[in-house]
Image (cartoon, rainbow, N blue to C red):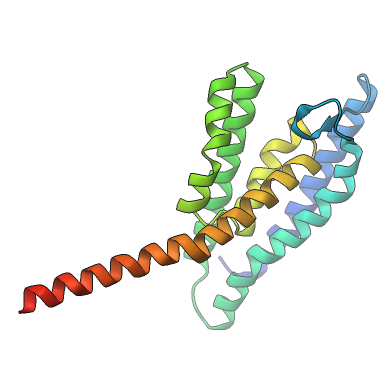
Amino acid sequence: MDIATVRRFRLIAIVAISTAYWGLLVWQHLHGGVPGHSFLARADMPRISNWWGALLLPVLTFMLTGAMLAPLEAAAAAGQQITRPARAIMLAFLGALAYGLALIASVATGRSEVSWLLFRSLPLVALLWPVYRAEYVLGFVLALTYSFGAVLPTVIAGVVAGMSFVLHLTLRRGLRALLARRRRDLSASRAK
């Protein structure tokens, strides 16, 4: 895999996602109207039309695929192979997509206990994986877009990404430092 292939993927992703979303909007328009969604599914909250996703999703895809492409371009510029990092990015994207699809499937099938568990476990997921990275955000947003439009999933993904960034910057880094210190102390005590 070379960097030109990855750049083509970016263009293909933007066009494919935009086309699919516009197709969904046209289908919704012709079959009863384009729905909107309220925050927390509350009637007293503002209703956001799915039409906003027609603007948001192409821009979001452009920005996030650019962020996904940046480390691959840096590796290619350094003369390194990009196959392995590209595969890791794709696996992260697919993992976030699968998590979002599981969340949507549980909501659609009326399994509220499963959807609530998946939603409540997002802080743990944010601690274990760096879901602040672009590939996680894009996968999660795309999974939720069919059911909730693009705006609400983007807000949710933004909050979870921010939480993940803070957790990785503070708690996870602190735990690593604590474990490293503990290992050094154990090594020093064994050496005596």
